[in-house]
Length: 267
Ligand SMILES: C[S@@+](CC[C@H](N)C(=O)[O-])C[C@H]1O[C@@H](n2cnc3c(N)ncnc32)[C@H](O)[C@@H]1O
Image 1: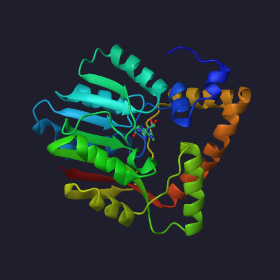
Image 2 (image 1 turned 90 degrees about the horizontal axis):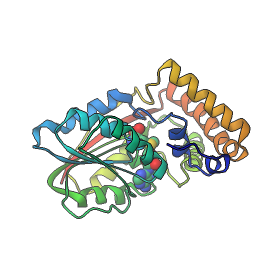
Image 3 (image 1 turned 120 degrees about the vertical axis):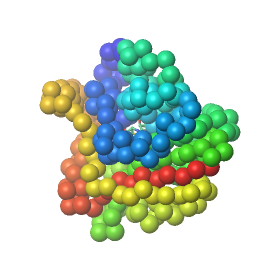
Image 4 (image 1 turned 135 degrees about the vertical axis):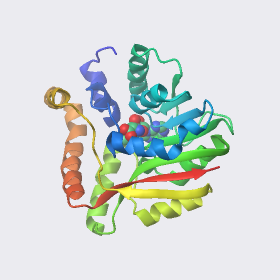
């Protein structure tokens, strides 16, 4: 990936900046353990050469993981051009031929009806303003009896209304679109309204937010983040609420107010 100028870096969104400094390299909410749970539930190897869509693939770490493990054709989509550029480069290094990356918005997917055997997405459905609309898009592009699986953050009832408001506000500012943190019950309702069959919320898990950085990676990421915050006023303005959010979020996680859930359904 080419080196960006200070101005170009200042214009990056939060996800793109994280990818640029090497911080988007493993699954968000449940780490690889969460991804493995999701893969196990999908029973990918029971379908002959499935066509799979990964929504919100970022730099494609989960896409490549699945492409290497299964005889499948997998498409990773994301909004950001920069994350997909990194995704392409990393995939070429591995000579994987069963992976495609494409810029696309989950709210309006550029695929015909009935075209995928499996659609899955981690840490994406909770980060869009209208998850029912997105789930209906997933359903539209799935083949009959195709499978959906999503892994997303939810809050427990124990979180005070004041904190819900504050965290939702900061998260919306960070993501750049208005979103609301939801409870398990609210998610159950959303999944029911999405119109999938055989709906099942696998369970929920407390081991959230486990990005697997090596010690060396972590030092490099922290250094790059601090550096860009010091030299780049635009990035400083964007990152300050993120860091504030991150501290508050980590505190509330430690207090046990959040979990992630895996939703499954079929068309
Ligand atoms: C929190 S990251 C999750 C990345 C990865 N799935 C994971 O679990 O680690 C969310 C990703 O979804 C992408 N995204 C956000 N809104 C999107 C949309 N409407 N359509 C497609 N991708 C979107 C972002 O660009 C970002 O790369």
